[in-house]
Every structure is written in C-alpha cells, then in structure tokens.
Length: 428
Image (cartoon, rainbow, N blue to C red):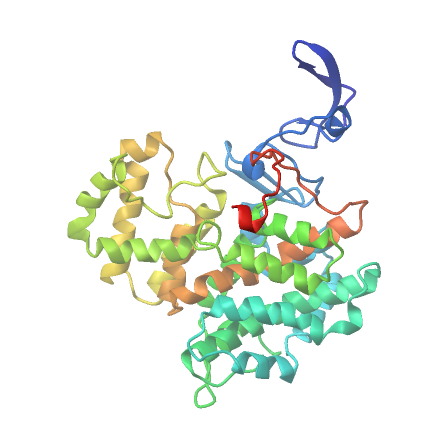
C-alpha cells in the first residue's frame, strides 16, 4: 500500500484523486475504482494494463524472465520439488512438512477414481469427439455427482472439491483419451505416483501393463509443474469471473477449460507440431526462416517468443533439459522430426534476428516435442495443459472466495446507435 495519489484532470480542470497501491513486487497500480462516481470509466481492451484482483499466488516479471510461485522461483521448484508438492504450495501458501506432504499425497491418491456415472457420460460422446470437448463437459458434470461438498462458504467443502479436482483430472483426461482412440478405460493404480499413474492410464491396456521409464514419468511431472499456474491469464481470469457469481467450483473450472481450449491460449504446443509438419524437413528450414523474418508473410515460427516474457521463458530452461533427456531415453535423437526441431532451436538461439528480438524457444516449444515423443497425439496436448493448470485455477478461485469480493461486472464504451423511434412493421 502507499499514501501516494494520482491526479486526473478532466478538460484541464476538475481534478480527480486516485490512490496508488504498491504490491510486494512489480508495478505500482492506480486504483480507478472510484472513477464511476465522477461519471467516467477507464477503457482498456483485453485488460492489458488493468489489475483485476489482488493475489498472493504467482508473480511474473516478463522483462527479467522471472516466475515465482508463492515467492519461490520456478527453476528451484522444478529442480527440487515435484508437482504434488507444488499443488500443496499453491493451495496452502507454504511448502509442506514431510507429514503434511504425505497426508496430502494420500488424500489425492485416494480421490483418483471417478464415479461410474462419469464413465457412462464419457461413453455417450461420439467415438471421435475431440478430447477437450469431452473434458469441458465432464468437469462441469462433476457438480451433478459430487454435490455433497458444494457449499462455497464452507472451508472443508472447498478443500474436498479442490482435492477431488486435482486427483480426478488425470483420470478424466486419460478416460477421454481412451474413448477417443476406442480403447477400454484403465483405472488408476494407487501404488503409482501422480504423473506415472497418468501415463499408466493413458497407455496401459487390459492386455498389457504399461512399464513407465522413470525419466518419462519425471518429464510428465515437469510438464504438469511448469504449467500449474501463470498468474491472471485468460483461463484463470475466466475462472475468477465465473466464481465471482457464486458458481460451484466444478462449473468454474469447466469455464477455465473452455477458455484454455482457444488456440490463442492453450493451443501453442499443438501449433508447434503443426509448424514442424508444415516445414517438413531440415532442407526446408532456411526457406521458412526467411518467411518468418518477412513481415509481409503470414508464416510465424510457433513456440518462439512469448506475450508475457520479453526475455527467456524461465520454464523453457527446465523444459529444454527434460526434452533432451526424453529424446535420449527413447533413442529419438535421429528421428527426422526431432532433428528438425533441434535445428530450429539452434538457429533461434544463434541467429542475430531472433536474438535481437528475443524470440527464444519457450515452454510450449519443448513441451510439444516431449509430448510427441511420448506418443501423445496433438488432440491431447491442451487436455494435459488443463490437467496441470487445474491446481492454479482452483487456488485462484479459493483465494477469491476467501477474501471480500463482488461479482465481476466490466463496463463498456458504447458505440452503437443513439435513441431511435420505433417504426411499425407496416411502415418500414
């Protein structure tokens, strides 16, 4: 907080004083909440210069390439922690003790199964329905089954709902995948860790147990961890806006899934694979690099640069190491597609054009390659993103619910017709 004030002069006079707030880190914020009392609103399409809330969960400095969760740098969390511990941190605000982590893991592990009605619901979709369309519907439908804990004013109910969502999302994601490819559902195995269990449900069959290499389970855990939260992005803001109406948590998370499905938000790693397919082979790289540098050419290199990070994406540093390890374990270093991807990466890190514009490979570039190497189809990429992001959504929803809030109600700059007289139908 700060005692400083910003003064707006309307037509050179009529000063309006507005308080300036100071957060722990980042830019100071001018509080424009009282402008309406003076007959004015601010105009900020896409909210690019508007703080929509106060939050203690995640901080990003795009210019410096910094990402903190509850004050901890993402690089340290990725190196020293795991996804389940990060879930606890985001939800509870602090790292768990050994006993707290063990208890939390137990709660998540024994919430992984889903009600049979949800299985039947998934089976009702067309066999070739897009997995994201199924996940959208199924997450919303969870409120019709788990309605014993929907009192959002009850702390225990909120906790149960949060644990259910974190635990059941991998199961739902894997079931939607199995339905998509026409295979039987594989139930969770409580002897396995969170990420290994997800791969078990994805790739196991009743005929053959899936043997997961530890490096692959760790890679999936890194993908979940690095996508867990990213401040007030489109889907998180959607969850908060839906939650401000008092909607139940399952409905709010379903709204977040729907927002994430948009290609401008959650489809970046899928776009990376589409780009690699378009380029086709290493022989075509120079041609496409020229196209990428041509402002008049619609082609863009996907997975390079980031709207928020004007420096290196800190998550990409971690994901690059994981990507190299996965390709080595799976002996795919000489696969034409992955050789093409690695050559593109080398050019982006060395070419003056990309270096000057800071168009470095981002987390989506590497995660797309990893998911492809694991044998996961592109239709599942955003589903996996949603699975990892669920804890971020529910943490922001819970933070909002536990603090004073009002229903979200943005204003508009009306540019339509002025008052018009109605003309009867027979006179038009």
